[in-house]
Amino acid sequence: MTEAVSSFRRLKLELGAAPTVWSDEVTAAATASATQALEVRATNLENGQSQLQASYTWALDVNGRAIGMTSVNNGAIGRIRFVADIFGIVDPNNTGSSTYEGGRWLTRSGGYMLAHGKPFGTSGDLLFWIGVGSNVAACSKANGLFWVDNKGNGYFGGSLSAGLRRNAYRSTAVSTAATVESPPFGTGGAPKTVVFSLGYYNSGYLDSGTPGVVANSVIMTLQRSYNGGAWENVSSMQVGGQTTVYYDDLWGRDSHEASVGGSVTFTDGLPGTGTFAYRVLLSGATGLWPITLAEANGSNFHIGSQELSLISTEG
Image: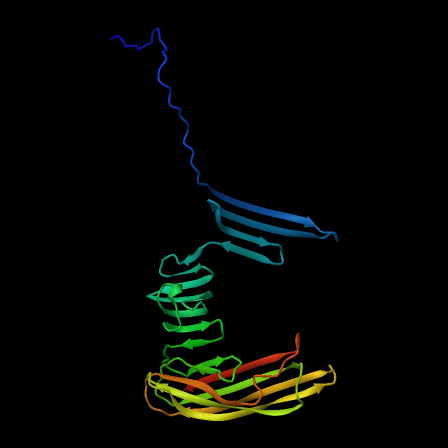
């Protein structure tokens, strides 16, 4: 059998239509890289001593977005730093996990979530929250079983099977109209001891003032709401203090000191196992607090604080 062979003979070129220009298609290429480095070094110091340092780095870079870890140890301080959008820890049986997302630790289990870290939630002020849900953006004081915010407020809405039930709240607003209120909380039906108190202090230098002493006072009123009902007054007391204006010989200028405060203990014997809520209102303030005199410009010695607190305890 003869094998067929193809060939070309007497090829001829002729003038024809203009040819089509062809070029390679240019596209933006994606990039990805992985880096790992281990370093150990010794540095001689001027005093003849040596400083040792070991470091380990790994990094993954995709299109300019890098994640990774560095660890450094110089014999005195060891540091490990992670850079990642989400950092998770999962047990080998995959029965539970915690993740670090957006500056917060999140633990999800059985429809509940525990979140704490960078302020979050619908109002953007929660530091710690436990409740039903899975999205930190939807967390709020209204739907939380237990929360703490970045203003020092907190709430516990769960239940205790034994021991004391205690709720504590405070307001640090410097105002004669400040209030403090507890959200509704569960009860075992036993009497509740409620302590509410006010403390205010202010001192500083003045541009002008009339030497003397002025009496300060305010009425604290405790109100109660049972099972979501209307607020009713259950206890009240007038507390006092004074504002003193004097000439400071040491500094050669007018100064002042102002204070007001007191504490009241009330035993609430209202029976029932429904929800209770308490709040404290201020009214009828007299005197010079908060300080109303003109204060010296640039004073470095001004001190002012106020705390209105509410604590209820059920045995």
